[in-house]
Length: 174
Image 1 (spheres, rainbow, N blue to C red):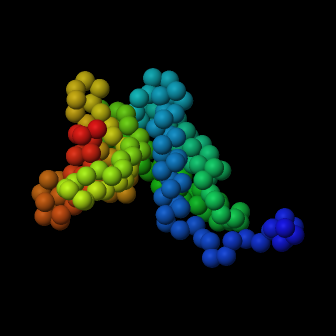
Image 2: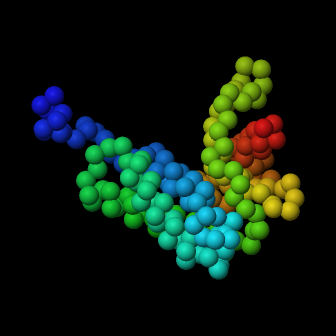
């Protein structure tokens, strides 16, 4: 009790690793895309007209995600470094969204699936980062934050990239 309450030692071997950074980034992105329509009136997606307001919103979402998602005792320097790095990286993503010619709108965020059966006795689970939909048709696009640009069908085949096709199967069946 004395050690925990008064000495308050930091965790041993705890560090801000890529997994923790990614988790906080995902929380910030989910908050950002959820809040975008109400924070910027009339904005269903990021456009060149609203990009500066969207960047400000993203910075607030990163700050909020840090407040709720940083589960280790990080010193002020570590916290600032993580926050500024996430703000810089996610700002680039927001600006790329604004520059994209797509008219698709973020509709589903962090779509979870559990025990999706690929074949008898073979099941997978996971989470789809974002699904953008065409407001005027049933078309959509899967956005995976880590993958960057969407691979072509030839790349998926030649490089045996299974993640996006798996996501398509899950969405079709859901």
